Amino acid sequence: MTDRVVLAYSGGLDTSVAIGWLAERTGAEVVAVAVDIGQGGEDLETIRRRALACGAVEAVVVDARDEFAEQYCLPALQANALYMDRYPLVSSLSRPLIVTHLVAAAAYHGASQVAHGCTGKGNDQVRFEVGVGALAPQLEVIAPVRDYAWTRDKAIAYCDERGLPIDVTTKAPYSIDQNVWGRAVETGALEDIWNAPTADVYAYTADPATPRPADEVVVSFEHGVPVALDEKPVSVLEAIEQLNTRAGAQGVGRLDLVEDRLVGIKSREVYEAPGAAALMAAHAELENVTVERDLARFKKTTDQRWTELVYDGLWFSPLKQALDALLASSQQHVSGDIRLVLHGGRATVTGRRSPASLYDFALATYDEGDSFDQSLAKGFVELWGLPSRLAAARNQRLAGQ
Ligand code: ARG
Image 1 (cartoon, rainbow, N blue to C red):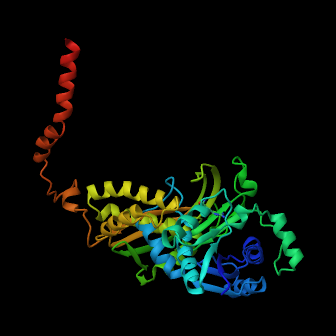
Image 2 (image 1 turned 90 degrees about the vertical axis):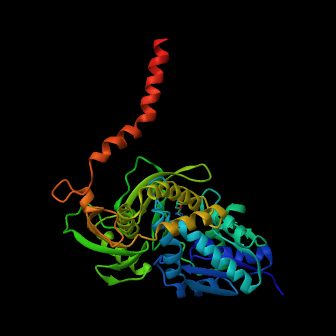
Image 3 (image 1 turned 135 degrees about the vertical axis):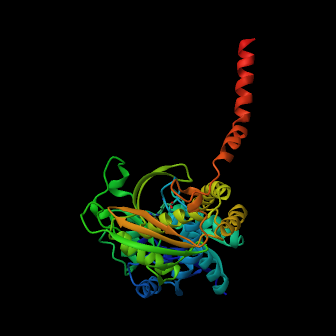
């Protein structure tokens, strides 16, 4: 039987050209796999047919939108995952999911190789290859753009030669990667880090400076899972989609960042993630209300480590899995409602209520009904400060000698 290679197929120039090229180079048949993670754009059936027209023996389209929302975006939400305190891991989350589908397709179609269209300068090559290695170490990985110095000009020439049905006339001004969790834009004019992003960079968000009435939304969570918007039940995917629309319309979730890539390069990236930004603002505040102080403090370091592991392509690593267990456990009481005002580019929390609240009005109030025994504070402060006082007394004693 002829060997096969499974290609992560986007429908774009590079991966379309890669079909014929991989077949010639390896002598294997190419199976193209396109995964729908809510990236929108072209119809996936069109993309599937293009893969076949470019010479794939099989072309598969996988609708992984719910899976992506529930198994990748949701853990990121529960980890309040913001790389460098800002970037919600949009592309970093999608690669491990795509990897699971490539590996499954390789087993199903009897392929010994998988291929992706990443360059050698980015994080995504790492995420693909480390992911494949973790799930199916026997598979060989081919990265034509990186390993064979494939350039846009070479790709266009190849298209012309073979008469491939790909539109090569329009060159996108940016490199864009998008899914339901957000959108990443880089290269072009953005490579000069003094250049402000122009309006054409954005697609998920409206200009936050445009005057418009505010929107208000109540987000309900059960055990860290968003389950309703304005009391209407939603799936995780629907929560993200609906908030992408509503928060996006208010310009929420734009960011412009010089980012530390795993390969050592600093790169300029502009992101938009309106739904993620709104959900994360709500989730983080509900944690403030429902998570006990020490767990909350510890969780912050867990969140950050989890985020770095995911950014660095270690989604399937043992440490990431162990941290998943801690994060899942931490969500036990993260249930309740958060009211958000979406306006002027910000998602602002204006109210919280929860059956699992640790906020005790009687303890917190400065008005009538105070149940906090202030006389206990005196002794507490005394003992709390004892180590510092001992050290200070020792220092004075030694200084006086
Ligand atoms: N720098 C981001 C990351 O590593 C986004 C990468 C997006 N990829 C792209 N082809 N534009 O997660």
